[in-house]
Amino acid sequence: MGSILVLGLGNILQGDDGVGVHVVRWLAGQAPMTGVTVLDGGTICASLLVELEGVNALLVADAVESGQEAGQVTLFQGAEMDRLLARPRAGSVHEAGLAELLDMARLLGCLPPRRALLGIQPRTIAWGDTLSLPLARSLPEAGRRARSLLEEWQREDA
Image (cartoon, rainbow, N blue to C red; front, side):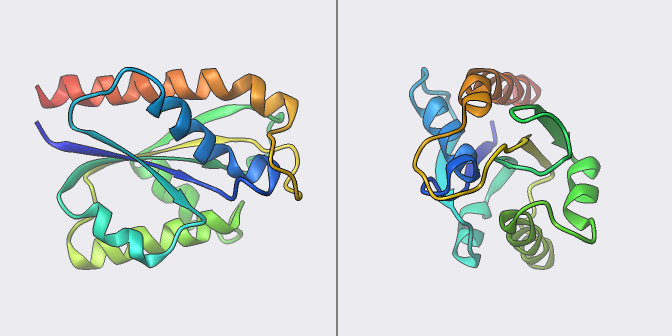
């Protein structure tokens, strides 16, 4: 069985911006999954590149500006994720950083073959340490969708 990395992105001191971190905290509070590492990636930096070495699947949770209703959860997988990250105007600061991180991984030959971005439409990115009501309500759905994808990847590896 290969290893899976779940990376939560965001600044928890900027309201909905920290939703990715809240998702990984939700996952960490559930029954552990063999072969899955859950990591708070914060606001992302190149130092996370080492975390991708030897990983065959990557799930990133982050606030993604997609023009949808606040709290809407969308899963972008594989090429769809790559296209989203290649768009001319990133929907968040983390999106640009994530695109750079994955480009570095691609150049170094450690880009996970399976990857997905679980994006949650933010309502407010402002100073504050709590999620807006729509995002707080969508957190369990985001966590369940993340766990479902992880279980699917584990079945494929079995």
